Image (cartoon, rainbow, N blue to C red; front, side, top):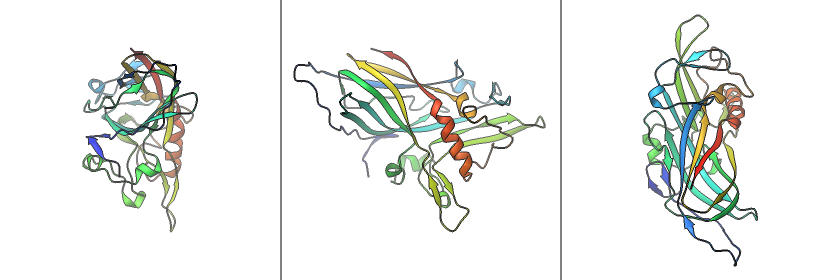
Length: 254
């Protein structure tokens, strides 16, 4: 099991990272700031608990809870060398917790062909035991295969009979538990942010467009898919597809 460094953050492990002997290398600190928007309009927890968003299906809705997990932040050189930050962060927008992450080990200066992270946990990480995530009620029930949530997005929406109804858009590893044995499909995914050049201490903005969870490629109808989504294998696969367009690299401050 990986050692826990602090709540929601795990130890840092560097993979190989070689450099040209003629290149002057210094180390810098890198910080990831997580920001949130609805099709470009900034969203914070001060916007929660009020029905003031409209999804692609035309449903008016609120957000009451938004928490999600990222892991395995990686800086990749063009020669294939990686600096892998073997850590996870539970970003809790509802309570304004862990909205930024700064690795305790510095990153070498230079040009990186890609910066990436995993949304959720890969399978190796997902089935370890994390006391901090357990205490945050982040577990998936054993009848659904165990492991941990990737995201919890909850609120209320105006349904097709004009009533205010709750929804729970929770993402986990897709599981079909209708037969004698559980059948799984991976729904974690890699977010590729693209190339960066680091010359000094840097802050990266990681932008989540919350509206994308409801529209591309699957236009989401909350009247049909508003609750009981964790045991819904097809819904989990659809949410995985919609997540491919959610994250973008924003401003880099150096």
